[in-house]
Length: 337
Image 1 (spheres, helix red, strand yellow):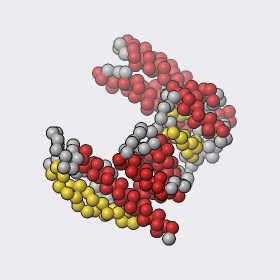
Image 2: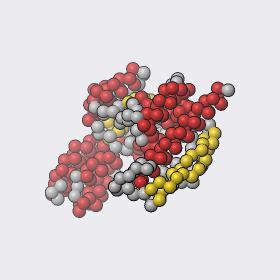
Image 3: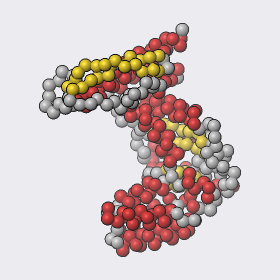
Image 4: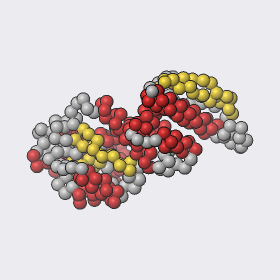
């Protein structure tokens, strides 16, 4: 009886929510609400047609808008798709996690007709001594300043984080200072791809092909010393080509970007250590759901949905295999994280 009532609640809420989203998309495409008279209208409403969408809680009856003067295409429901589970899974997870039905209902109303705020979430992934990945922390972090990162790391340390040998991420000033102060034995590796893009952003279009090849030659070196030497040569050539800003960015960032070439990190680990692709793949899965929602009434609701999505992803693709063989890491590096 409990399951049937929960299914009915989830089905009704998801059905109402998706229909509201479809109407909002139609208004955006038409550049006007239904029956609204305004200049700049791009299309007119022509009613709805029915469509069913299978979900775990049952079949949803959707009302898909039709337009005259424009083709209605939805980012909410993919064309020809007949099944979607993530939205009602999130609502059911909210309920089972202790969020009351009134709160679930209020959240749904706020998402489509109330006050909406921007929200940020910090996520950390660890690779332990056995070489398996695990999401070790998720917390709100609207501002990526030093105070926010320190609070984030302090919570992980308080829960037992230790032996960190490497921190991989982007070159955020708050993250840099926090790692230096709170994880003094850890080395920092800044994403190689972000580094190269940053340097190329300071390079005029006419020089980018050459600069791109030169940067690839830097990161292709066999060890850190040769990479630093090659970077110095390339920076000098950039200055000769009047690319002073790009040369400065290269000199500033190559030290943290070439950490993965240092002694102690096996060569077969380099492809996984030199970028933050691991966290970016997870972020991509998170954004697939947050884009559908579009906005959140508060940071707690954003955090809850992100946690549900992370648990969904990691329970299916992470637990069945080892990410890397850490047995050959130097003992003085500890566990990579």
